[in-house]
Image 1 (cartoon, rainbow, N blue to C red):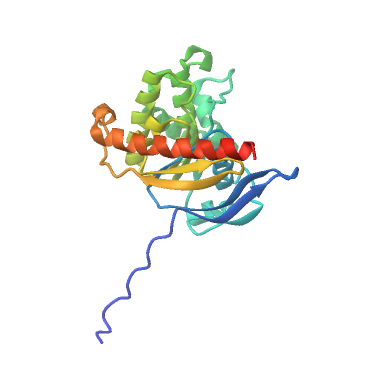
Image 2: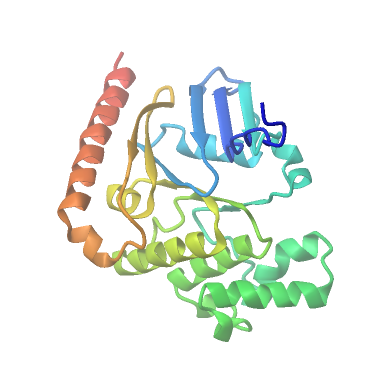
Length: 273
């Protein structure tokens, strides 16, 4: 045997490894049946399903905002509370921008850095970089009320990016926006995902948004919440608007539509059981 040969490299850890994670509330409501899900580093995974299927519950457990009742949830092989010790950070972008109305854009974006005690000069430089990434450099001194809904959502994303995350969790961030703004932000998000080499878990009710954004779509059903199917979206990036009128897009959308109908039917039948 040639002793100079180095041992085979171990496979990289999953960014997210969820094993038999379940959530039951104190009143006995089972929000989520035991769930198994692995998200690879650099993947863009979307959670799709009818209302009440546990998408946001699962996302909040990944973020450490909710505690699982049982099961194991690891981020890069560590508990959520040990994530930064492993050299990783996460950011959570909520459905609404949740901006401080009295503070300008720069101050809103700087908030997590101020809370972490980052020196002002360093914080302001990072804020400037984050605003440039979302195309809002010229609006640093503007108040939220002077911005459109789409621009406010960009501020929220910039606030998520300013901590330099490796994991970005997004809970239906564009659901309240008009279609044109939503498509533009979807395209911008894909560009950010690739440029920053992020791992993204994204919650939405939109089939078209799921197909456009994702490497993989995880379909969930409700009562109780559970994963029922997974769909790879094996189409190349970057994805232009032309992709949305292609035969491939229609094929994926039809598969998801059929799956969502099955998931919704399960939910309706369960509610009448």
